[in-house]
Image (cartoon, rainbow, N blue to C red):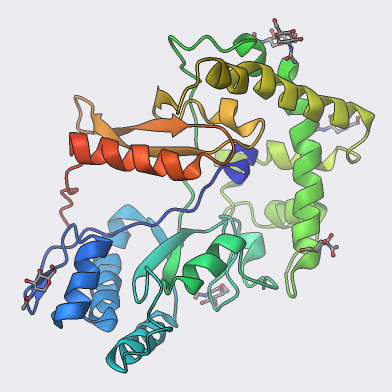
Length: 336
Ligand SMILES: *[C@@H]1O[C@H](CO)[C@@H](O)[C@H](O)[C@H]1NC(C)=O
Ligand SMILES: *[C@@H]1O[C@H](CO)[C@@H](O)[C@H](O)[C@H]1NC(C)=O
Ligand SMILES: *[C@@H]1O[C@H](CO)[C@@H](O)[C@H](O)[C@H]1NC(C)=O
Ligand SMILES: *[C@@H]1O[C@H](CO)[C@@H](O)[C@H](O)[C@H]1NC(C)=O
Ligand SMILES: *[C@@H]1O[C@H](CO)[C@@H](O)[C@H](O)[C@H]1NC(C)=O
Ligand SMILES: *[C@@H]1O[C@H](CO)[C@@H](O)[C@H](O)[C@H]1NC(C)=O
């Protein structure tokens, strides 16, 4: 959970689509083709949003990818269309003007969407403001279409041919300090988040745990348990032990992946799937994952580009170049 928090986790998901209106091809549409469609009159934001809402209604019973759609998305789209029609230059200047985005459900939005990080206990809670990334997306003109599910990340770290110092310590959460630091940090941050909400059914980690115990079926308690929550609730804040553990994680990152990258003047490290996220998360380094292929069963897998702090622009460039060079992604074939 904390790894996810530390990494850049917002994702903009283009929903696959298959028909066309007025010559505009929705399927595999890119931001550039959408702008083109807006400009040549073959597309409006409202048509785009309608299309995606339709696709979500059609595919979601199978995919369960979208948790909520925004009741305001069509209105926001209509406003974007009106701005474009009136050629209000400043209003339409954003690179995402009138373009829908889906956000992961742990990203706070100050609108009528719920922000729950997948927890029923937080249904109906109201945040005081948009998360920074949401504020920027809105400033760029994006229409927030809805919230998506948070898939749990599992699996071991696989790093080959990368001589990261102390990797065996990094991979052992007891030795690395992760186990000592993260539950305490989690409790601190969660309580801070909950107490700062302008409305919430639950106000503390203890209340979340109690809520889960009272609603074991909805929260799938049998399936997932709430071990991290219990472990966290048991901590007593960031004391000397936790500070030492946080310091150790920062050191492991500095002496490990950061030193390696600086020594060899690497632009990025490149690993299968998102296995490198733990290594990156210890000191909040950025990573980006893109599709890389399909296994023998047709299940897609990705590769991750990781870098030092501030490397986001070049990582995005590299990931984009990789996508363009390989063109490995195929539109999903979903039969409903
Ligand atoms: C308008 O632009 C879109 C996107 O590039 C294209 O698919 C469509 O054919 C164009 N329509 C017209 C009438 O030029
Ligand atoms: C947010 O959650 C509340 C409570 O379950 C629900 O009534 C409401 O429809 C949800 N909002 C959206 C936009 O789905
Ligand atoms: C991780 O470190 C602890 C404490 O040193 C040790 O007991 C444990 O066996 C280690 N786990 C693994 C998987 O190496
Ligand atoms: C609420 O948020 C602000 C800034 O966003 C932070 O400084 C403060 O510590 C938070 N917690 C409480 C309980 O106000
Ligand atoms: C919480 O702490 C108590 C007392 O130290 C201990 O008995 C209990 O096992 C701990 N629970 C968890 C979930 O770690
Ligand atoms: C990691 O390895 C280096 C070199 O072997 C060592 O000096 C350092 O103390 C180790 N531990 C941490 C937390 O970086």
